[in-house]
Image (cartoon, rainbow, N blue to C red):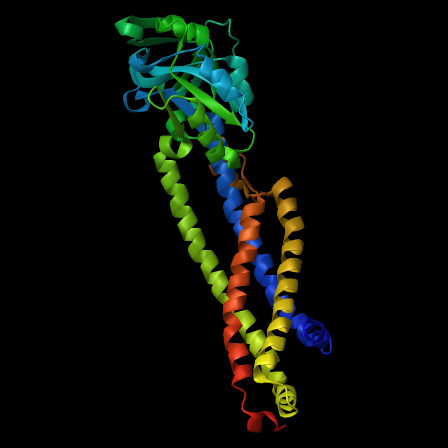
Length: 404
């Protein structure tokens, strides 16, 4: 039956190729459309997360809700070395973070003051590339770096001084005057409005928290392995002592926007699936209608309807698989090209993106999972739309079928 079904396909090459093409374009356009939709959001999220929070962070249990030094950790805790040894983990970045009151002249503003290891932080966030004025600091420097919007609000420039006042570790007073070494542009406005970076030793001195940190950012080799890495970290750390949080828990608003966008994207792609379904259905129905006389003769000479339906089912399955295979094969080079050579947007859009410190490009997502997902979905759609054509073969009216 398989051999006969395969030969039947090529008795009318044009009809077969038209039907294969309907499945081919269904897979092709579904993967391309999903690739751009998914790719743009991955690019934006990756830029935001690599500007500060990262995909995963480890804190003392209760720190995220309270954010005080009562929930700080020892910087040399042995558990961090074990986390760094996890296969999915690229590195760990320690930070000492708290709130301060920043002042310049008659202007004041609440800010987030973060002590960082300059080299480790730069490997993760590439802060030195985001510097728009001045320079990046070293661990021996005694100056600070301000975020762009904060510097404009306080009307501060490189080499100006900023006054910081806060409360340090164990209730100690924290205050100091620091020279501004650089201005950095962060993609997320929320962070660009309130960030002050200083070398970790300087921050520990400022907060009287020698040897202490408040968080550890876990840098991943592949963001897609985030859930797997979190599961492994949970096995290493004591859940009563430490909390392990993903970006979805830390940046709830961003995650909600992502979920909302994914939902609207699914509505749009569902319309494409609907068009695909009707397109394949119409093409297959046309193919069945053209062969009614042939099917009538086969039944008349003694072929069982069940066997005929099986034969046609094999033919349609071959067509479906060929369309899926070539659709996937044809879309991969397109997705790869626009991932490595993304579309550059117009000047107006470029200005809008530049305000967030993000390059104005439209890349596709280079991930196998969503591409295979489109293949599975189109395959299921095709199987569903084949039900009626096969049923029509089984219920074929011989009297009408034998007429030409």
